[in-house]
Image (tube, rainbow, N blue to C red; front, side, top):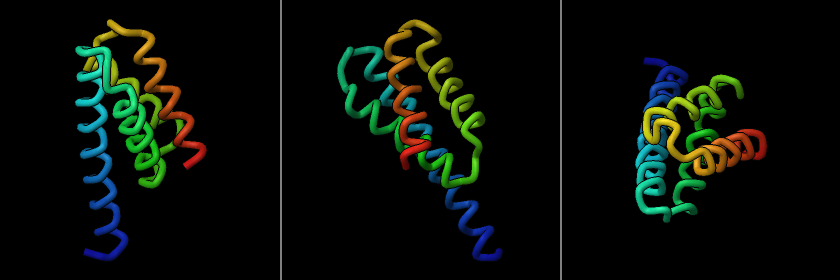
Length: 94
């Protein structure tokens, strides 16, 4: 395995771990109405790692929205908007 391939695998693993953390923070925030800082941090990390892994902004937002849909199934628009907003912000500012 080349160094580039090893880095790609590591990046993919990092994205998966960040996606799982984002999902957990979203679920917690939805259930408790707390943990907003953790939600924002996990959304930011997920999207930043997506960018670093070479994903386009469009793919990143689609994936973030999929995590949101799978986790809270459209039951909390305010929370979903906040997560997507933080994701987009960190994709471009990261």
